[in-house]
Length: 171
Image (cartoon, rainbow, N blue to C red):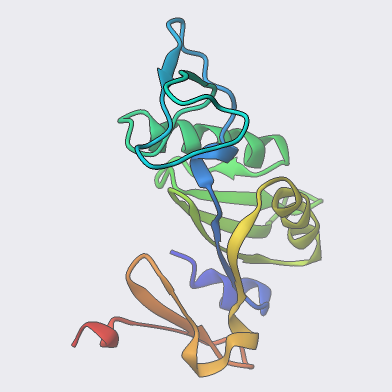
């Protein structure tokens, strides 16, 4: 999907994943609120034991969690100018300033991203990453031959921007 990073932009691809992804989602719009207790053995000084906590966003473990996160991220990408691909709903494309080509692409896989593009794309993504905190953010060219894992595949990119995808770590 993202091999066009090399062909179109001659730019380094970026792979990142969100930290506490579901906690960064937009507030839930449930009519009937959910509540939970702290897990057994977990204590917090401002939460009395047995106290119920109101859930303000969808959580990991709820069936609605991944789709709510995707909706949150999708809305922010589209508000930044990216267009959701009609054939692959995981791919977002930022049109070029003149509208004749593209400035970059993002592939979203739940809380993981692979993206790349020109300087216009980079500015949009820098704002996006300022809002959403990532635990991992890897510049593929800087990572060298080792690359990084994305959705079960090791992806690397050389200094000529060629991309290699392998699953060798499984064999």
